[in-house]
Image (cartoon, rainbow, N blue to C red; front, side, top):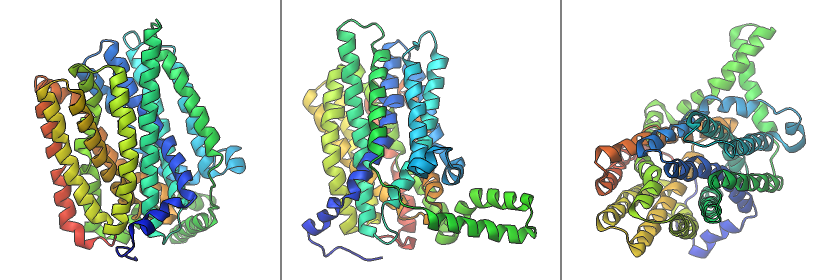
Amino acid sequence: MEIYKKQTFSESFSVYLDKRMSKILLLGIISGFPWVLIGSSLSLWLKEDGLSRSTIGWAGLIFGVYAFNYLWAPLVDRIRIPWLTDRIGHRRGWIVTMQTVILISLVSWSMVAPTVNLAIVITIGLIIAIASATQDITVDALRIEQIGKHEGRSMQAGAAMAVVGWWTGYKLGGVIALNCAEYFQRIGFENYWQVTFLVLGIVIIACNIGLMFVHEPLSTERQESQKRTDQMIAEKLGSSGTLARSAAWVSGTVAGPVVSFFRLNGFKIALGILAFVFLFKIGEAFLGRMSIIFYKEIGFSKSDIALYSKGLGWVTTVVFTLLGGLFAIRSGVIKAMFISGILMASTNLLFSVLAWSGKSEWLFAVAVIFDDMTAAFATVAFVAFISLLVDRTYTATQYALLASIGTAGRTMLAASSGALVDWLNGDWGMFFVFTAVMVIPSLIVLWFMRNKLNLQ
């Protein structure tokens, strides 16, 4: 792979002017927005309806489906959506279908209350999570397929734009959700969150309209490669009948992507990659799961949170994601992963300072800015890292496998974040110290395999 360290800053930045980057930006927005619904919106809705921190934390287990979407990713890679696939393409057909499910779920949420129907609220949240996780499989595949196989610089820039898009969908979606909820509450709506979910449904519709402007490349090469794998398996089965062809299709769909990943990387390095991906962002997830509860308990209003954590945080995230992409291009993905991990752990300690000092708007702003800076660097490096590892024959499945393993660490373990705060007797400062320490194991794993990875 080529090395671009001798480029000037302006030459490196010019890659962002590629028209494909705006399409990748939109795909990121589509991917990030559902996290607003089952993340900060659902958490604050449950909090303001009187539910405990532990209940809110455990409700976050619905994010666990992101850790398992690789199980059905092979089906998303190969099954065609009736009517839609022929008219708008394989990837876009899946995205529109999942967006429709999310829209129906929002309408359903607008009709229930958590204290009366908590099981129904969580079930609908689970449906949104499943639809979002399924959507992410094909969004990531469509994003990677916008870039050529050997365009390393463009892939890293595309990763940055995808992250900018994701945080745009998440942060600005949060601004809309929080401000709408506060507005409807202020003018006297008792079920102000339910009305807010109807407004958020309009955003879903707008995303679907924008998706129609994203080009979907023809997938004949991928389909032909998959057919060759099926044929090879059928020949080894020694039969050409319907049963053999069906068995070959299932084997190629399920086992092919996994075998390809281990063959390309080697068994030990493949295991090291999986361990690193699982561990890297656990601390960030613990902080993120409880951050909005912390802001509320320390005394900030919904509009304060919208301004500092969502609005100001979005601007910071966009700027430093683009800079993080340039850093990854010029210094290499491995070095970017090390530096972003160290920064991510260090800046978590700012929240400890905020917790121990009490409510302070300027310290809140500083903590949010630095947290978003480091999260931006870490996320763009992480996305570029796993994007460069996938085999184009199984783009959706392999990316989903790596991304979902990372999500497993962030969601399954972070579900205990509320219980950890309770165990610490509400000592938010010590909680954030724990989140800072959690990044260390992943950096140790990366250190031992750094010279075995053929990435720049």
